[in-house]
Image (cartoon, rainbow, N blue to C red; front, side, top):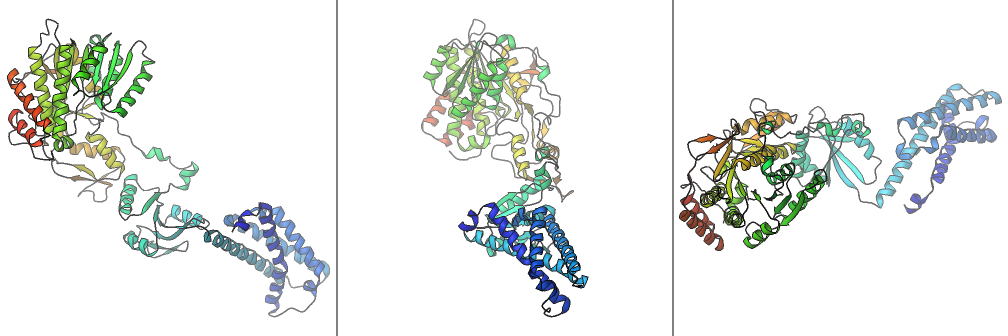
Length: 628
């Protein structure tokens, strides 16, 4: 193998020409034997060695002129075969002309047979040489044995290409078409997909090549997932037209979902004007600055021309990402200082030093653990961060003379049925208690909170979850057919926080008129159809993606609410309402915090649940026990 691979290109071409040349007298003798049905008598062309040598020279010249010697063995296909036929026919004509000049009078049929025999010999020698060389190459390398899924045009082209590859060997086709199953395509048997696992075992297959570029991405994803469950590697092949650039672009098959297109209402960005004056030339701290809401608050605050933005975040990767983005944006908004602070809101001493060092005047508290199933299983960490962290930051803000403190809350805090919602409700109670004891009119801190529903596009929301499931080919999972949720976009939520914070007077609970709640089942259908797929259900059993109902999770509601009390009052903005809600007394809040601190200190999840049962509205016997 080393000797053959080390041969220069010219040497290989010389060997091919020599082989073609040697075949000239052999083909001539064979044609005479076939014509005369026996060994020819000595004489004529077979006895005229100068004429034979001349024919061999003509063969060499023709091969060079036609460029046959430059064609690699592995590329010896239709066009090369046609050139060989031209070569053989021309050589036969030259032979007939020499015979006529010499006056031998050989039957012309002999020259036709000569052309056919020479063509077949050259073709056979080429194929034989190719197989010998491939055997030599393959003897020193391990071959990957593969199945080709799809016996259509692309699959056939792939099988033909793999025949000359010394590292991959196609052993069979697999196809969904019953018309193709059981047939031979390019020398390979076509099997049903149900026998893939058996084929893999019997033929030592390690990889399946999907050669069906025209299938929808959802269907390809389903096939891929099924094959991967058999512990086989899967690779997808685009069509050769796509590779050449003449087919549809692969990226054109992607149908991105635009945040807000499923709200069922007009986005409110243009209906929430004002608020910028409250943040101009101020030092603003955003806790949880690297999160979905926190990062959007940073972007929108920057447009208000603050003096300083303090990015407070406990996740180092998230802090790095938002700091890099903000520094790039500051280039377009000179005059604002960006400060990145890595730390936790639960660290009281660090929080106070940060507020002092950067002369913070406004705090936007977005830091929270918000994923319902995670907090349900980790209540100690959830309450330490969401309740005690809020209390630590809010108390420090009041002590250090921060002018405004705005808590970002959630609709899950209203009559909570899960621990995450309960933790946010208790954070609200803490802020309401501080607001009741702060002399806002006399220059004390203005404590307020903003409560809104699900944010489309944020981490953990259903939209990115549904998107990822659709890309994988489904199924799209839904907890209950009747579930509804209020939705808003990330820019809407951030803008609401800023506008509400600017009009707060102290102790305010702001909610947004978010329109009607959105049925999640309808949202799932719309997202599937917006991605170019169809829903598979009883009415359409051949659809692309199925919606599977998994059952409500522990603590999950069918319908969320935005108000605890029975009424609400208007604000200067028609889309922002102020809730009328009661709150605990100072003594009750102190007792609540004391019990939470004790439970956190003992890492006692059951104690957390008992606290929730006692203090959170609507929580009587509603919390489902999980991990601690």
